[in-house]
Image (cartoon, rainbow, N blue to C red; front, side, top):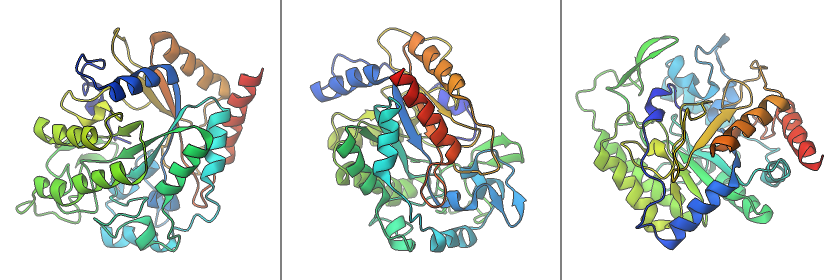
Length: 348
């Protein structure tokens, strides 16, 4: 997820538009009625669990470890050699989500570290080509979604990519718990004289977006994130690509520059107000981190999550609850307990 909420809050435009295609209008109607979804952050950072070389990462988000510890790509990428989640069972994931009342599932096809959880022909830095697991995680999740009636959405970090010298955020700075830092990778590539973000978009980001739009069947949404570098024209290019290949697929407001079909406030934030004719989604964690971090035991109770869900329902916002699977591909026991509690409440 994003490292700061400020970039998320203002990335929104009108949801229901007169020129919507029938497919897009139908998905917007479905989204508003769906109310509850699940997100999963899963990737190389899962293996590290928020720690590096015997020290705890400075960022509470486990998936931000490479950034907070300035881990060189040549070192961080070695995690791929050990990524082998042999207990990964997406059908079990979807059944648990369905039983808890969730209607859609969003998973990280590529996070800020640049590693793809699917077979990408654009970059060999992916789960099939670079790991011993050699299975297309996104493809298997898509099959499990179809088998259980859960709609599939995909998270894709379109701007920031720490594995690429032209990845976004190199010249955009934020205040972090570990000091003022660029959003992008400025530890491997300190000299920005040859930096070209547009080259990254054309070489990797847009081609990978086309891949995930065309390889996994119908998608209910693309969940973009942290548009810290992108111009309006660049954001629009992604929107147009989605509209071309998936006419009924929603675009999250974190595509940036006032575009998008629905608003997602900051991480773990509920919209302060909602307006008729607009779509909203609160996205939140079960504990504090989005990616797996075993030392983070600050899990919310089932009652806490039900209260958040009720608040979202009362203001007309969806609620998407995140889980960080462990290195073997399992939901942590605490997460399973929460999902079981939500499922039991539905039966009661």
